[in-house]
Image 1 (cartoon, rainbow, N blue to C red):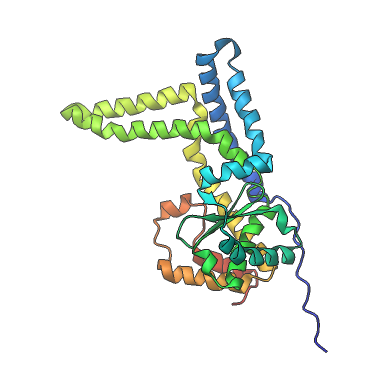
Image 2: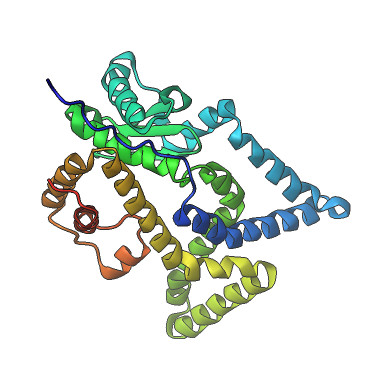
Length: 295
């Protein structure tokens, strides 16, 4: 008589510390956006300057409506709906992962990323995307990647991601304009010859002073960057652990080891690693082994 395979644990959807920190650390960016929108409202409609920021926040609520989420994902993340052939490759693996976790696979929508890199990501409240290269993986390894992405959803890492992206958009546009001005300072320095450096320094200080007066929240973004990146790395470890709880740990470790060989380890500079939301693959392997995963 063959013994039944031990049942895998059913995972509950519950926000973890990384998800909570992502919301908290997004507050300065959201506040900066509201300042930008209030200034726009003051210029466009001084008597009702509050209308623009309020309307923007209300419009952001549509990101929780499935139909609008599906409309926003392609332009924001560069994904597309899978072809019939791609769906035949992807759907069985996704259904197997959801069955192992005890969740309804039909609640989520599958997407294909146009990138040729081997990757996958979760977004919004219902989206899971894989690259075309990932679709060519053997079923167990594709399931391991999908289990990791399901872990992000169940840990609450993506539930408000679209809303935060929407609310932070005005601040991001302003930050991009400031960066363009900063990139122009060396050209200004050359134009002034011997006096170029002092002039560029004064202009730089002037830009910072204007920002501090108009939108002080924007100045906090560089300071919070490392903390936000650390929080996101915690989220990646959490998603790996949830995939391991579903029985996909060995396949995930094997896949990460292949990536280590392919990328020749982690050649990023320490500052880039500090600001990256993705931990080094070798660190992910170590955490999985500490959790008890054996290849």
